[in-house]
Image (cartoon, rainbow, N blue to C red; front, side, top):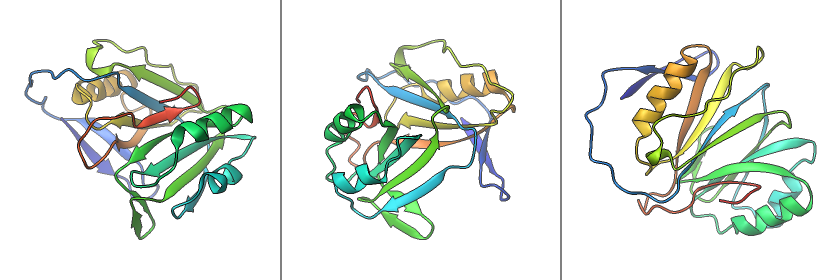
Amino acid sequence: MFGHQTIPTNGTITIRPEKPASRRPEIHKPEIDLYIRITLSEPKNMVLPTPTLEQIIESLSANAMSLILVGENNQLDIEELIGHCNKNNLLITGGIFPGIIHQNNHSDADVLIKSYPKSTKVKIFKELGKSAEFDFPKLQDDQHSALLFIDGLSAKISYFLEKTYSFYWDNIKFIGGGCGSLSLVQQPCIFRNEGF
């Protein structure tokens, strides 16, 4: 089990280990992706209220890697978005969430886009529930934070977070959340140029 400490000056969350959670029997889950995003600078962000595919595409930059957070009730065809981005050499990654909160607004159909430098590093862990060890990327001197997205219905989330914190300790600050749907039906919810 992990606790968190909110640091008001920059809004980041640092994950600190607490007492280990009790072991639950593992439940077989389909392939699960996990992203660790190590950022290098402050991103620009844009919220699009229930946008069309065209509006999202117009908002993406060829000079950046775009992080796209999608509310679960948005009717966006993610595979069509991925196909268009691949044809136009647009780097994307993102997830589907029960809702998007931006400032004082909450929506289950909005899209939040953040642009990061193309040099932003992305690490993907597949089949999280089947792994005992993880190949964590080593930090560079200018890397101080990590953004983690995990399928909220993944097995072994606490184990993965313990391993993550043990590897990085307090050398970076973590923030992140669980992707997926309030329906609690597991389906692909993390995507990038290669697909779901």
